[in-house]
Amino acid sequence: MKTTVPALRHSAQRPRVATVIMKRELAAYFSGPIAYIVTGLFLLFSGILFFSAFFLQDRAELRRFFDNLPILLSFFIPALTMRLFSEEKRSGTIETLMTLPVTELDVVWGKFVAAWISAVAMLVPTLSYVVTVALFGNPDPGPIVGGYLGALFLCAAFSAIGLFASSVTKNQIIAFFITFGISIVVSTMDVFLIFLPGSIVDFLAYFSASAHFGSIARGIIDTRDLLYFVSVTLLFLVLTVEVEQRERR
Amino acid sequence: MIELSHVSRTFGAFRAVDDISVSIPSGQIVGLLGPNGAGKTTTMRMITGFLAPSGGSISIDGMNIAEEPVAIKRKIGYMPESAPLYSDMIVDDYLRYVAAMQGVDADAKVASLANVCGLTEVMHKNIGELSRGYKQRVGLAHALMQDPEILILDEPTSGLDPNQIIEVRNLIKEIGRTRTVIVSTHILGEVEMICDRVIIISKGKIVADGPTEEIRGHFGHYTTLRLTVGGCTRDELVHLLGSVRGIGALRDANPVYIRGEAAPVSLMLSVEGDEELRPAIFRLIADRGWTLYELAVQTSSLEEVFRALTVDAATGTGTSNEEVV
Image (cartoon, rainbow over all chains, first blue to last red):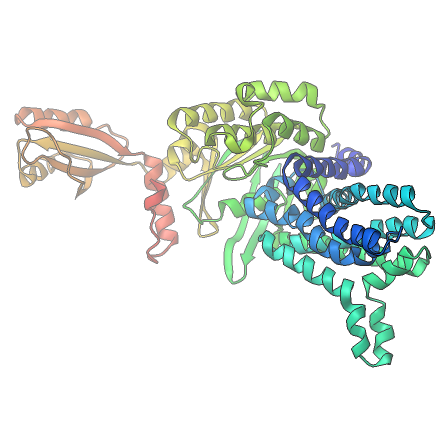
């Protein structure tokens, strides 16, 4: 019997399987119109924020853009992630996918990385703002580097939330609103914290994505802020794997 | 070797599969037969690891599916019912993707599979634009990608036109020479044509299991003949048939329209035993000077077995087996 051979072969192939899934997702995303519509709209809205500060307030910086990035991404990332599992479940392709030699983890990781890359790709055109401020002013590089670094983490966390929402429903619209709901709450909660007593504010403030992102975007790299995004990402990835495993049971 | 021991699957309060034990040695073509909703798809989904059993265990070549799902999935090529595939992908890209997932060299394998499954002309079409028959063939190519030891096909011929059905059946027979194949269907003729062994499922339980010939023989030969005669009354015909030995129950069949014949009589005759009664019936009718319009075997013997078994298992709950025919 050659029972051990396939098992060994697979353990070496696991990253490869997730990569194949990721590539398929990216190809599906970029070969359709959604990628360009979403990226275009994102550029439009972020452009309004950036240029209103740039021209009206005459400031050569990206602060206004980064300040509003969590809210902006709360609208746009759900549009990228809503399809990931919902569509597979609605059309039944989840069955052909899951009966290939894969684990739930392979599928979740492959789809997550694809979503993350799509989200980051949406930010790439905004580098033109950096070029613009560099041409017309003398910006402090710290907040810009920090802002983009924080954006990578923010995209990862929101993508993981989106993937999870997509795994719990066959309906893409519902997946969109679950992701939007969670993301907008963690993006705007520090505004509402003013109304609460001080003792719980400190506790709840830890859950605010915009607070953690804000401190990274000021150019202060604190491991606690990074840890927040890593934990949120991992939490929702683990939950997604759990949802997928439960579907089998 | 596929072994199911006391396998059950419940969905809430509904028992889709109820304590099934079966073992399938390598190299058999097995037909899983049953009315819609009998538990065929659920059983297949459990063997392929898509669903976990609620009770009991499934092992393939000694490996338990709960412990080594990936190694087992590698052995199995599976095509779900109606072949759900990514409709926005081009056939060639899709098969290359499956090859990559299976760790197979795409350049060599995809072209040969396209040949075997008759896909060469549609390789650059979107899967969403394909006809049902072609889609089914892409599904078959998907299932055959890693040269699986076990091939599991859920309703592979449903929704195909008659020519496509024949092609797919021949393909399955061809593939089945070298590997284990499990095919589910509710078409009895299909099982008689391609399967070495029949497992009949009804209400989540196995009601018959054995070689196709044996199943047919074991439950006795019942054949139904359809007879349409002109130039006589129903009573005259019934009286005449009463003299033929071997004819069991008679019942009225749906009447047919025959040009120039006022009132043809159509009957269904249940025939017991192996004897061919048609020559005798023909001569009797011809001797009377009546006109014989139809004398045909209506349902195969396996179909009678199937009806008897699946209706019995329903114990008069009124389950309709109309779709079965």
